[in-house]
Length: 106
Image (cartoon, rainbow, N blue to C red; front, side, top):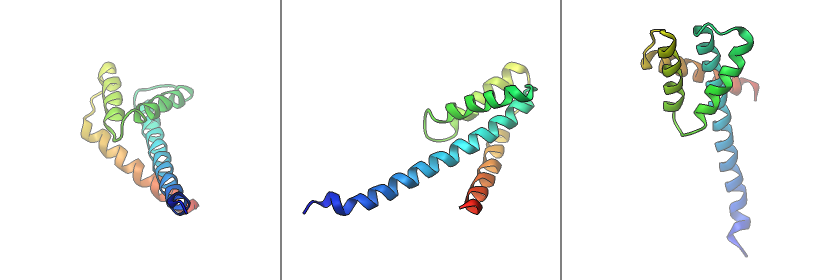
């Protein structure tokens, strides 16, 4: 009998865990994008679009570098003083919020 039959549940569980982590990161990036949009002085309706741009930046490579680079670039362009550390701290805060919120709704 094929090992594929026995490995299917494990593979499905691994895929679900990966999808869940991707969703958490996307939510976190959306939240930090909304925060950054507010700091940039964007009107409320434009913040959602900006947050989507931040979320997409986070899908390019694993980790937060693309998100931080995008926000840093946009802040620098607008003359808003912000450090990478401040953005990373906000990402950490939003990640904790999203993780706690998603765990409490499951």
